[in-house]
Length: 470
Image 1 (cartoon, helix red, strand yellow):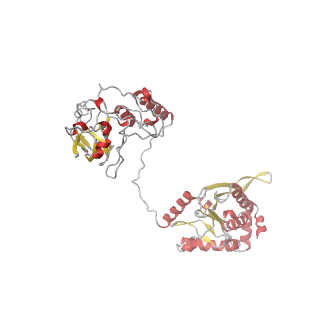
Image 2 (cartoon, rainbow, N blue to C red; image 1 turned 135 degrees about the vertical axis):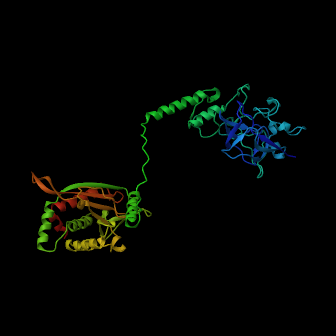
Image 3 (cartoon, rainbow, N blue to C red; image 1 turned 120 degrees about the vertical axis):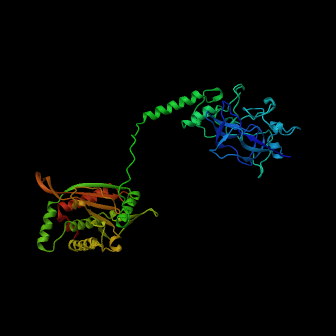
């Protein structure tokens, strides 16, 4: 018949009166061997694995991990004398006529244990690396009610008295081996490694049979400190002040923020740019305005874009990420950036590839007025295939536009200003503009993007080039 014995937190020496439960090594229902470590506790002096002096089935545990217990408080209870426990403890000595006394260990920590000589108890020899150790010569098969006892290894051996003889052998473990026990006996060595975040499996022991000594750990800590000192440290920055005005990202501003963020997350973009002499383009515009309705620079650039997209259709496309396909679009629906009191919007000129400069100009004017009045419909703000961004109206020369997801490219146009320029072999003052193209690198390479941008620049410098496509 099984007898339930209570195992209390022993006196760990040096006047210590309490210990903190760091980690339980057994669960309720586990079968434990005599002197098997059952809990890891930390005192003010060291980290210690406490072995249980009884062999049997764990029936209860006291204290959660992180709880501080006084010396003498119950740790766990063990049912000894059951058939399963006897089979699992057969190699360590069976029960005697005097009850549970023979189930106790001969190894003693201060305050608990028995006087039975250690020599009468059969030690469990550590198994070779890669082979599961057993606790008895003839292990009983595990049952659903009583699982097999946890293997006993040198990494979880009972702390011995200072007068106890040193172990005759230590399992050798190569540094970096992720399996098997760690060749460490001293709790102080374990604690020192834990305090410095050192993985003992990466330390080669210099002691007998590869035993890791304190000097080995200290050397590894010094080496790690030297490596860390060799890496330049980043000066600590003060925490950002978040006490200012908070403006909700909602409405148009919120929609723009989400779209731009998605573009940056999903599109691997790249940008190329070129300076172009726009003197001839401005002269052509002046001549057109003198002969009929006024034409904006944006309308001229939009017509140049549709001609360029006819030559380089890769940039009038989108990417179907789920299908892993590039979808080349048949029609050009040209978006243009417009700044309003409600924020940045991108109205879309439908079927821009079928329109001439005058038609495109009229549609841009109509959509711009509707944008300023806040009367644009969702249909007029969606479905674009390519975007033209004239940030030159803000007085800036260049920019790296963010692609209007899910499109594949955007052309940015800076301000047109007089600059020194070599024209026909002589230095002259010309009307110069910077053009920048941001493109989705998934749909084309730099050659295609450069060809598109160069064609646009050629049309800006020599508007007559457009006559071939009209």
